[in-house]
Amino acid sequence: MKNFSEIIEQVKTLSMDEKEELHLLLEKYLIEARRDEIKENYQNSKKEKKSFSSDVNVLKSLLNKKVKK
Image (cartoon, rainbow, N blue to C red; front, side, top):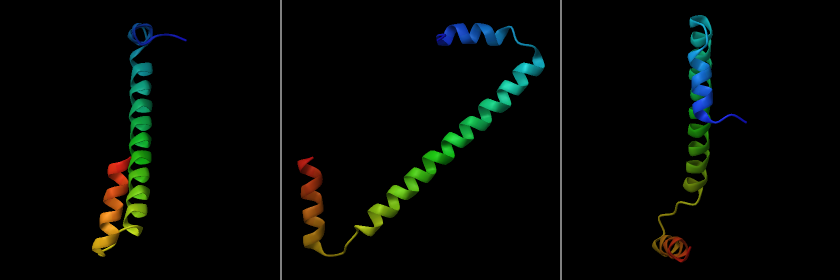
C-alpha cells in the first residue's frame, strides 16, 4: 500500500481532466461520509430522546450511570 506522500506525487502527474475527475470523486465521497455522520448522529439523538424523562429521580439515576462510566 502506498503512503500519502506517494499518492500526492502520483496525483501531480495526472492530466488536468483526471485531476478534475478525482476532485469530483473526492467531493462526492466527502459528502457521502458527512451524510453518514449526520444520519448516525440523528439516530443516536433519537435513542437519547427515548430515554429522556422529566422525572427528577430518573434523571439523577441516568447521571449517576454516566459518572460511573
